[in-house]
Image (cartoon, rainbow, N blue to C red; front, side, top):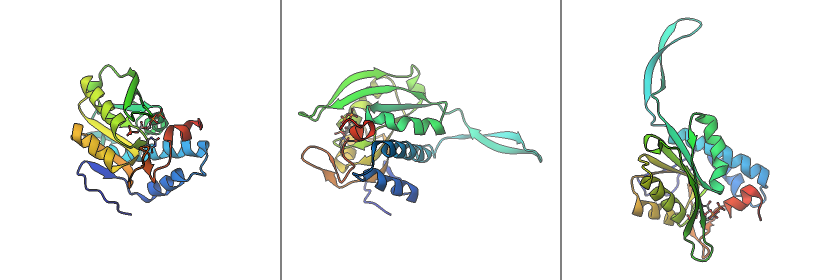
Length: 215
Ligand code: PRP
Ligand code: URA
């Protein structure tokens, strides 16, 4: 399946397994347990794609048959930064692929009146400037939360920043690119638009509430 992607810095992960899982995730009938499992699996599959350009170093390995040259990751250090709360659902899937990654937390919620992000918590790895950063959040709607997280991380010294979102709205992508166009965005889908409450259409509803069963 191809999607309208007019942005150079946006990768839409159109792998059939990803698209299949995303459809179940969107379904209003999918319960919290399955929703959590799907978010974890999708995050893992997204990390596979987002790490495609990691550098390799040559090494030698002795197989049961003979010694041969082969490749290992060239010491790349990664930080996974979930935007609280819904981003938490994506962390474990990524850590299964990249167990040496450090995890930082940025607490932001979207004020329901102003729709602007409000920061309430932040704890980052001390060496954030030396790490490839993967900011994770299921939803990129207005882009306010992700843009605030990117700017915040930049202020703390982060350089290489990637944003992994399950679903992106065009408005959110434009917002990120307006403030920080050197961020690579990975998503499973670019949806149509935002509704009057700034929810993504068709989207999947409120990711945090569906993950944690709070509504
Ligand atoms: C959701 C979502 C994003 C944000 C996206 O979080 O997880 O962080 O909204 O919206 P935006 O692009 O318009 O900023 P929410 O604020 O609902 O908080 P929660 O994760 O605690 O539920
Ligand atoms: N946050 C969500 O959880 N869902 C949306 O559609 C928009 C913001």
